[in-house]
Each structure stands twice: as C-alpha cells, then as structure tokens.
Length: 314
Picture (spheres, rainbow, N blue to C red):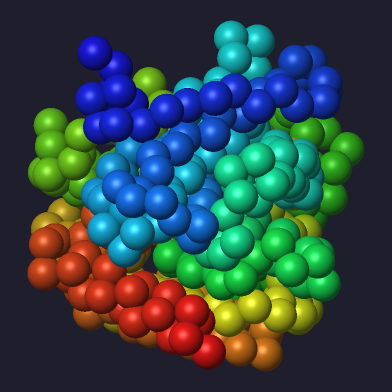
C-alpha cells in the first residue's frame, strides 16, 4: 500500500504548461474532513521537500477543515525523469499550479474559506502569491512556518557576492553552484539517523539536490521583491524558532533550533509583508516547526488554531 493510501490521502496530477525543460506537472494531495465542511487549508512545502507531514492533515481535519497539499513541479511526487529536481528560474512559475489547485479547492470542491500554509521556500512563494492576489479574495488567511525571506549568509556576502551570483544566474542558469545544502538538518529529523520522522530520501535526500545559479537567481530576486515591501491583505501568521544554529554536520543543538535559516532575518522581514501580521516565536523549534519535539509542535498547532479561530470569528 502506498504512503498516500495508508494515511487516507487522494492525489491528482495537475497538468502544467510546457516549460524550459519540457513537460511539467504538479500533484494535489487531498484528505477531506470527517464531516461536511466548506473550510480548507492548502500546504506548500519548501525546497528539497514534499508533503509527508500527515499529522498536519490530522490537525486540519480535527478542526473540521478539508486538507490539501501540493507537491510543486519538480518536487516529490511531481518530479519527472527528464527534469532537474527542485529547480526553477522564476518563483512566479509556481503560481500556475497554485492557481489550478485553488480553483479546484474553491470552485470544484466548493470551499468558502481557504488558508494557505507555507513552509520555508513555500513561505516565500505563498507570500508573493498572496501579494499578487490580494484583491481577488481567494485567500482568507496565510500561515508562514519559518519562511525563507533571506539567505542565511553573512551581511557582506549578501551585499557583495549574491547580487553578482544572481546576475550570472540569469545568463547562465544551468551553471552549477559550488555550494549545496548541509547534512545536519535532515539527519536531525529522519528516524534512520537522529530524528523521529519517516520520509523518502529519493524526494528529500540528506545532502539535497544539485543547486544551479538559476535557482539562486530565482530566490534572490523573489526575496528582494518581498524585502522591498508587500501588501498582503489577509491576516498573516509568521512563526519561527527562538534561535538558530549554524548549518553543517549534525549536532544535538539542531533539535531545538533552526539549522537552516537565520531567524533574525524572518523576524525582520515579517514586518514589511502586510498590514495584518502576527509574529510568534516558537521556543526550541526546528526549521520545520511541526517536526519539532512533541511539546514544541503541540505549541505550534495551538498557535495555528488560535490564529485560525481569530480569523474565522473576525
């Protein structure tokens, strides 16, 4: 039995426009609430990531929300043999599958309330999507879980080196980056190493996938757009850990801190994304806050529940 069926999920493929690597698709994952509901959440994963957090669906269903998640193009269930895993040249490319998914959720499945939940790069994508769709009333609430608002690099590197790398990435998008992801975070969360979670190393390998300059450019220019100020209209919750540790080899401190991003960057840039933003610091949270140790993730779910109820009752 597949993981999806084992945990009660249905999946459907979303056909996308042909892009620079040819055919592309995304995957919409769904598990409806136990009783009839017209409220939904849509989860958007991060980089070198896909949906496997079935306890997030449990939380949503227990609140009587229909749960949806999307594996974006070239990620997880959506990766095709001819594609470069996880690569993109413009963050706005992902808007296509989000629009298709939201149309299904809203118009085919008749959900009247929709909250987006974005983690890491998914938080960057969903923030920009909510900004560009601020006036069409398709998103009622936005929840950001450790959003990727800035590269975790020293200030001198971000000011002097990244702009050059991004410009090169526009001209030579397939040029391989000499740097990649560090192994510590994945080893801190997977049950075969030092964590408690089960996920596919095919979709989320310990050292990630090869990164090219085109991806760096896509992220850099998306972040610059966000940092210059967005105008997200819907109520927004931004959650992040109380501290960061330097990415690298596994060490025990990674169980109580963000070992991917600098939480100071998240705290800073959350102030410029909209008019109705609530920031919550999660003590001892890891990068994906809902993968933190039990008492910490229970606090995360509690804060999300409070926020959702506040939006529904406003």
